[in-house]
Amino acid sequence: MKKISDHNLKLKNKKILLRVDFNVPIKDGSITETSRIEKIIPTIKLLIEKEAKIIIISHVGRPKGKVVKEMSLEPISKKLASLLNRNILFNNKILNENTISEVNKIPNGSIMMLENIRFNAGEELNDKEFAKKLSNLGDLYVNDAFSVSHRSHASVEAITKYMPSYYGIQIAEEINALTKITSDIKKPVTLIIGGSKISTKIKIINNLIKKFNNIIIVGGMANTMLKYTGSNIGRSICEHDCESLIKEILQNSNKYNCKITCPLDVVVSKSLEGSGTNKDLKEIVEDDIILDVGSKTIDSIRKIINESNTVLWNGPAGYFENPNFQNGTKQILEIIEQKTIKDNIFSVAGGGETVAAINKFNKLNSFTFVSTAGGAFLEFLEGKDLPGINALT
View 1: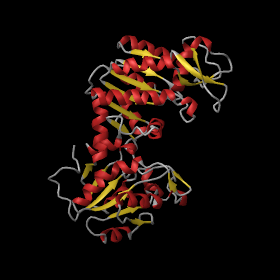
View 2: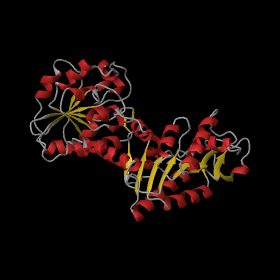
View 3: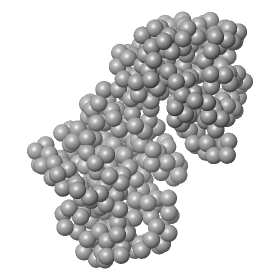
């Protein structure tokens, strides 16, 4: 693995094309969540120390090759400047013949951020000619955007064919953490997985069921499992026509000796805005909506985690956005935090809603590693090859 952090790599005077993922939520021109930006700062600081010229490439949203004012990276360049406490030059034009001369003017140790790379039609097409033009801007390419490395895009894959290419600090940490939790596992190992649909997570479950000792299913997925096994779930969110998927999970759990755990009790309400009532499964009535796991389930999860040496978490336990239904998610966070601190277990969390819950309860430092990668995180867990990673190797 060629890393930009290699101490022998001379970067002074070099123009570094740094691909990052600053696709962060923006509301009324203000950034509401900055963890993806903060995670890239160590790579940027390293390049500054090595007196490189840093050209940042990123995107926001899906403008489909057109300029969309609301998707400009200018607010992000200002936020990054604030976090770094240094000036950042923002190039507000899409890639053109003048961009090279503008890049050449920047001094060593300085930073220029290019406008949204997806404003260029060639980006999402993985167009080779566009990738060549992009490569002409720099001397070296660094991918520090694990979260887009499952995309075959010009600034992720094709560009590596035209210039020396390296891993950034953050992407190397992502790969090391996910490789460790899926390959170099210290058992017993437990997966806690949630989400609304089993169909979207079946590949992850079937890939990890061969390697993990426990899989705890929560959230809307658990409702589907409960309904299949004969429990009344009232008006709860549920995926239909999943009998074959659930049968497959249960058969594979027996085949690979992996224990599947579903909720023993739940917190229900008549609406998303209501208050919660803890009920055993047999007490659920037709107009109940399951919105969290119950106290018995939390005790069961605590026992499993306390007997584990490795924990992977993807998906909240319930509708944590409402404080009445956040207890399950919060308790799982605290159980993992205590186990990680006390016994130094290897704990990893990832996925959009999972990271949102972690940030809400201020538990970002509770895990060995927290992935902000989203889709790439899930595809890696499915066992898929990621084009951006393959391009680097």
